[in-house]
Amino acid sequence: MARQSLSPMKDFDYRENIERERVGRKRKDAPMTHLKYLRKRSGYTLETLSDITSISISYLSRLESGSRRLNTDLIRRLSHAFSCSPAELLQEVTHDSSVITPIEFNKARRAEMLVGHRGMQLNEIAQSADGSEGLAVRPVSPVEWKQRPVELGDNEAVIAVKANEAFKPHFSESSTLYLDPNASLSPESTVVIIKGNEVLLKKVWSITPTSLQLCDLSEVESLKAGKSGNLIEVDRRSLNGLYKVVGYSVFDL
Image (cartoon, rainbow, N blue to C red; front, top):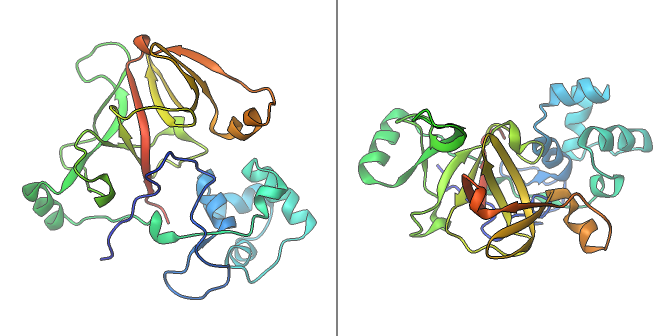
């Protein structure tokens, strides 16, 4: 089985994916088209997207493969479904499928991984197991482990966390995020914050030793352009957890 690659290890931006090849290359490991990437990012199956847009599943599949072209009506429907602009929908980029293709282990491989300490336990953000108030990071189960991406190196502080409803639409519930509680933060770092019973996936806009000013992932570019945005400020000392997103993988390709 091919080695899992982690995407990306720099400060995460869900709109920035590696431009590898043009649409239309017909091979098994051909890169994912931008239209399919937007669908996966939104957590939609072809069936769900068909229901939302009233475009047939077979035609959506042809659009994703590049064998059919978009017209004005299709652009309008799909842009609405993905909550993006027509310009973003029409970007001429493809996305390397190998970057976010998962590896799943059978029981024998999982046992081997546990003995060899080559894996990392899969966690979730849920109510604290000790009965205390608020959310916390805790293991999904003793047997839920993932292959450790080589890009993490020797950084044992990084944890694998299963995405949940709070991470939509940027991640589906089949995604796994790699979070580092010790990483240095800077403007535009992507962070996961646990505050009481609330989970936030945000971008850092500004930072002080005691506080963070945060914005939505989709608002960074407009804020940089001088437009108004929904900035929130949090006291770092009041948080249950603060983690920098250093990578992610997706299971449902």
